Image: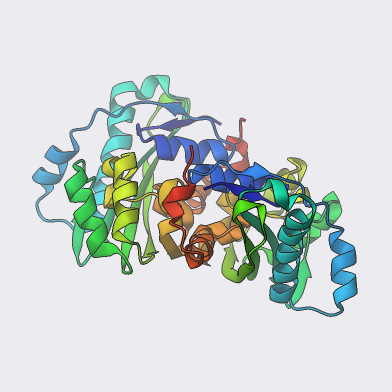
Length: 205
Length: 205
């Protein structure tokens, strides 16, 4: 059984590989900002659900005939103080985010959509949104400066990773740790099983 | 600032590397069974604290003069139903463990001991034990057979990993995910800082 990953996120690819699955990566080519703008006001959970589904369906629509297997789309967002925080891009923005979130907590939402595309035909999709609490350590200004200087926080939602340098600055989580990285493995397993497919049949590494 | 890792665990080494630290690995050469037997009855938390300290001190004692920096020892144990579960080694034991722990939860304890060995002289050590709840998914007998057949669960405490194939079979955790892997990065950061050393000064990758 083949998995097609409708996402260019290196973190999602690394998560699948570590879990024994080498997917075929297909860039979904979705204008995420336009999709969100067209949808109007959305909660973080609804936003990641919409974008995960849009990515999977874009791949099924454009290249489905050559995808014999399952097509997975995913998306993530971080919420703190009721505000969705995306990638900071700018060092000053990343520094300001960390000065605020040090010693506090937020919630990471990950959306998942899976299309049964066996035989190259879309037989329908299923989805789920998971979330995990992230509790940040009390970090010093010197640590924030050093972390921002590495560039790592600039390109990730919420300005942190848990599986790289940022791991030392997160005291605890409540939820599936893979949700924090952007793809909940147990959630994807449940979606796969809902199509009558064994998760372990995806193992190909 | 140099970190010396008094542990041969590949998971601890990988955790440090991902967090930006390339340690010098030194096998502590400790007979763990003999240490535990000599100590008499111990809780899981006391056992991992003792073994973490014993490993760090063994390296400081044998090779301390050539270790200018910090010496870290770590140890982990998994407890379910009040019983400490080590590495199953045998496929039948691993299968039996999973049939019992499917859909249930246990606690992973990780012990940490850090010696300030700057200048090659032991100036004292500090330690902490962390724990994290691990909630297993409902797994099928077919999944257990497939997982055991990979060999992965045979060589790890509790017969599971969270950062490899086993990740899909763990629904959620409560605690620091790195504790589950065997080395809590935020806990080690706190020990490092207790010596007046910045965590980010250990970054060398």
